[in-house]
Length: 513
Image (cartoon, rainbow, N blue to C red; front, side, top):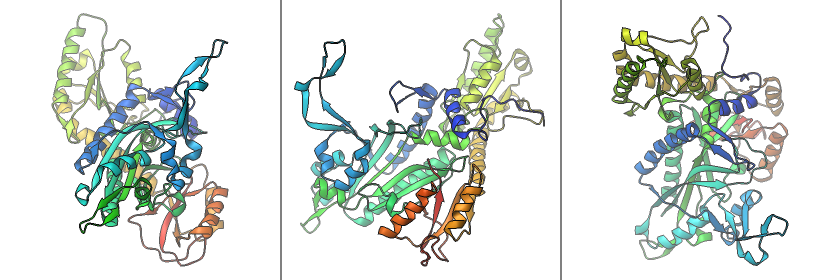
């Protein structure tokens, strides 16, 4: 095969971290904002987030959950009520202490000492406490339950080491918060949300995940159980892509969320919270991107098909544009993945080859070029982004008749969606190591596995307390973490790798983002 000249200057195999940054820039997803840890999400990047939001919001509402909105500022006293919770976020909290600025006499501005707040306000890192206050007002009787709420919002967690989409000081997310009569109802909601995240990741983002329970040390602060979906990135590291928490009655007791039960007594509600964020876009980049940029699964692509007429600044351009506009209308009349096809006619000035590579780097699933000869012959030049190159190291265009291109677009987009998922799943499943039985073997695997050692599945006795702390320290020394216990994993049949005690389950160990 001839040498391919890729669209990016950095290859994944050479420097994955730098490649990731270049994809964000080359695909025009986001840029630095001038505020450390905060980013500007550009139209293509935000369009992907809007698609994720649309598809997930549909799933949320189908479960009877209603959207609402809660304040950005939370009184510090709210966090003080829940000591374990606040301890988990204390180092990441941004705090507002003044409500006015004055000049300092030197041309600058400083907080006005006379405008100091009586009580500091925390810029929300998460909303359990402020939503708990509302739930305490809204819930009086068992008839008010279950109370199912969600909000789409931004949060602030003051990160020291930031990376766009993966870990930023401000990010966008959704957070669901629910209150229930019983532990069983709350656990059912916890698992419903987890399954929703799994389905969204796999069906919409084409990103295979492992759904399972987090170990005790990885629980959300104040939670009784924490469950997650974990995805393997192309460098073998794990990305936590969504979490769902059963909070027991801990937050209900702190916030006074009580109800009169069916016998007239007073009971605390069992509550849940669950969330995912713009981190999913980072996951899409690192799951599907290649050395030519991003590849966007059709389900979440703002534009699934981009049409590029080969304009020559000649009178005949008008007929070509009309031809392409008719093609766009034909495409938009088709269905793909349960929705009308999203097609864009790009008539911006510029050479068609340069525009093609712009859309290749952005990851548009299908690019269609149409020249005067194509129009005369009733065909189009079609390029699918998931299979970019042919054996001659040239863009792998096909030339279907225009009616065939339009009529088969739904099948083609579904095939691209499935192809991206299958490729990612095969890569993940081929990079999970099993059968290691000692800590030395675990250390050797990650030391000798090169830059992409993948994950290791080991047997686990579910140690707690000091025993778990020792395991965490051992893994920390190796720069490893426990990801989760797979929900549908095989039963344990040996001894715990860390303690030697009879294993009760299997867990995944990995390097992680």
